[in-house]
Length: 253
Image (cartoon, rainbow, N blue to C red; front, side, top):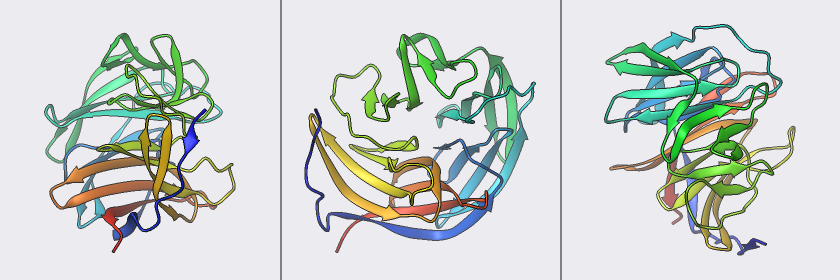
């Protein structure tokens, strides 16, 4: 059983940075390509944004090819490589995964495959047909990151290929920020969502910061930069609109 330590008062805080930008959505996943560029995946397209002082500006958009599959809950995963200036992507609404190269301000499709190549797996990452469940090895997840961070079927933090015990219940949007985890809340649909910064150490879980948002968080990306930590959230409002919102993560004065 996971023991939850009391929240650390005044430890860290999320501070809005830049201007929120409306985007075609809902956004299924976000991933930093480097300090200045962000990839956003929707059901039908991959988009490349440049971040200037936290404000995203669209640079390129690529429509996904292939027939659409019928799914109840759309979902997707990005695996970005800064060194190769490319990313793999997969959604549960398409029969194949895609490798896309980033060429300046252009997104160029390169390959299609049955699954996304994944560290520690010989068969790669794919979706269980017709569901939002990710299949990796013999395990099923609701979300997963290349660094081993994952979300189990019951909504609890898990890991693939690692030994640490996590277990805190969070939402399906999550990212690692160094030794910390950024995640959406585990509140039920329709409730006010929040952005959480969590430290997990063995059987202890510590909530370091939390901020409420107007809408539900569909995807998150986080990165430590020379100018400090930055988190970008794709937030869907009740009217179906989606916006990208940037937050700096700072020690509270």
